[in-house]
Length: 209
Picture 1 (tube, rainbow, N blue to C red):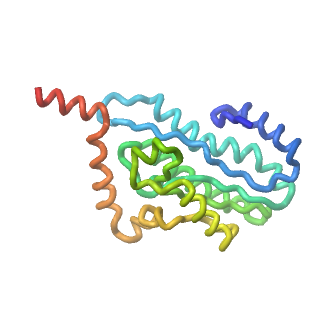
Picture 2: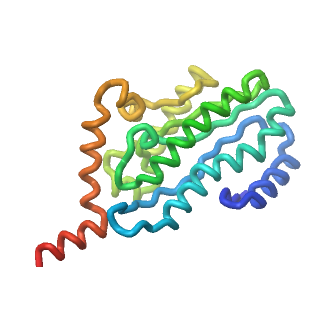
Picture 3: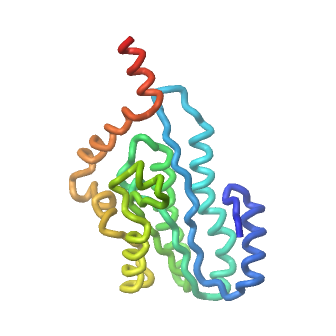
């Protein structure tokens, strides 16, 4: 059923409806997210930052808060949060998205510690760029195909049903960039995409006239 993760009432109504028909629910996946480009050199469009945090981070927390009593009450279950490789290796075109996903990672770590001993496991899915639609594939030819991503995730879960982090091969360079000493170089490479922001293109055109 549809849920608006930015509204607590919507989340709680959905929870109540779902648990009436599925009282043995044992897994919750928090996957809602928005990606909005921002140019921080221009006057900030705070609404974009607010929508991103409200959906990606607070939306995750609202859903988890709603279902924790049920999962803890049954003494077993799994919460799967969805962060992003961008949470570990920022894509400068989407600064608030990166911050929101870094927040999901930190929240997942703390949640796992707090739920220790309850029987409820916490796993964090860390996707790279995934082509969830044909349009996404056209915009980013390097994005991992959705079926390929899903297959790799399921293979990883079959090998280890309750990992702390679910890391497909395509996200390893993001996840371990700081450890491997490639962080600064990769962020600089990804910063080249800032030239594609509409406000930067307009500025360049004015400079050429």
